[in-house]
Image (cartoon, rainbow, N blue to C red):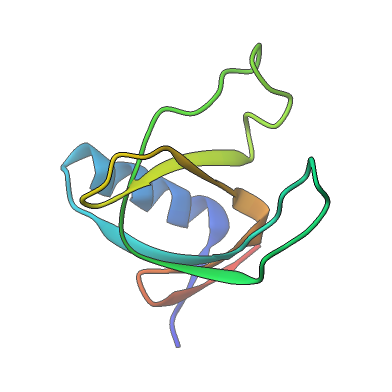
Length: 92
């Protein structure tokens, strides 16, 4: 299995979003306010969306906003918990 650095994966996600090309990814869920995980989540067709600014959240650097095609509901994942991007294993 091919690998990709976590920050290179995020850069590629941003580039694909810019041209409107959905991508797939997998991450470990985590709800920090409730302190629990629901395990791994697989997303087949996603695009990034605008996240929080530094003034809005102390997690703005690691909390990544996305939408799932064709829905437009806002969703989030923690960047350090990203496991796969477009079939590639994500490494720190």
